[in-house]
Image 1: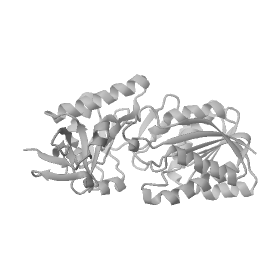
Image 2: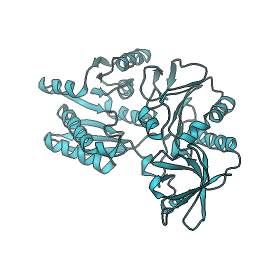
Image 3: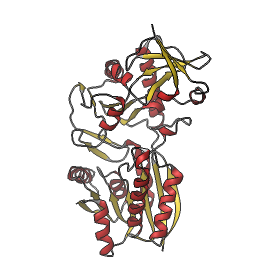
Length: 391
């Protein structure tokens, strides 16, 4: 018999508004027996039915809501949700073969991310319940999507929070490299050595935007990873592009991708800490027309927020000192805990300290394969800003 989670008084309000998480301190009691990853039924304090979810007694997120209705067949439930997510992506990207197929809570499959690279599917699983049902997910990808390779590339930080083992698994085929196209540029994906699932799909649409400001310009792509922003700048006709990353592997990837796409801009590939390299350029009085910075998340928790803001401010201050009059700063933050208003304020403070004036030209979030739930601020994380810079 399915166990029941009874919420404390008034704790159902957030759930009724569309949020999908129930925290451990919101639960009045558990009726029946439930192991981690088991399905539970959720009720408010008046015993009105709220929905069905996965339970984890050891996680701060004690229940992840799957549906406001009872689920009779979980295989059909997963299949319907994944197909619905696929159809949404094909609406926006009808000709692409590689994109984020499932974005966890935003696609009503909490704790499950699926990135599609041609016929290779890479999973990130951050829910005990999803992990228990992972073979059902694998089977759907195999039978309904023609998957040839399926494996996980999890972030250990989030697996630890859920109490899940950190080792990755190969469920089908092998972990071999892929050559994908983002609609304009070819990228080699090295799954074994690459970051995250292998590629940052969340910046895809934003990379196309930088083409508008890069024509004939001198450009820096810092924290370049596989070179996404810089490659698009070069494709648009940038005069020169410097690719900078602390990872020699990513610089190798960026160089391979540059050559693979037969790009003609003058190019330089630099393995260096970005902060250190920016300070050297400032000392040398070097100037550029467009400086693009896309660092990893500086704040994975609220405890790191103060330090993260200082880091973002310093990074943007250094970048601003490298930009010519009427040039552009392209700056991003993927820290969920730094909201849009705070991030823009950080850049504003950086401009003041760098004695620059800035004009916000464009703001965007993640690409269209990363939908957001309005009731869940947690699903909104990426900030992409383009500023015009004045002395």
